[in-house]
Image (cartoon, rainbow, N blue to C red; front, top):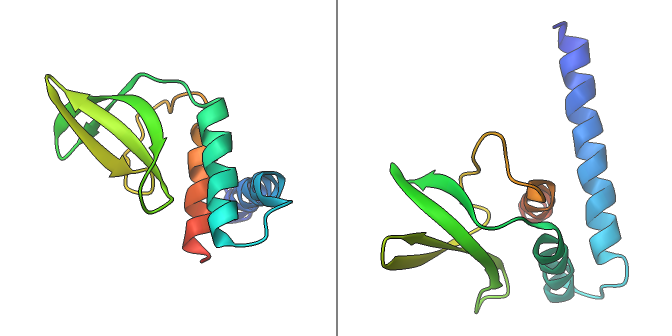
Length: 113
């Protein structure tokens, strides 16, 4: 694929993510409200459970919760063990689960903060 087409696709994806961020944060006054708006979109559009790998171990992501710091956390389980991991650090499987585009939007928003 020529470089210009690859750049175009990235730009389109970035534009789409920016539109999603705008949709989720349009009425928000500060960073905390913006994070909450994006969390809401992740919560409303995600499909759990889904399987992924964290540090080489297979886990199931069974929920997305708002962490004490106001950021979305994935609840991962392996056997009887549970662990919260920031969605910014969550490895997504291929193909990604439904709603993963909202995790990508959150990551893009967070990287701009």
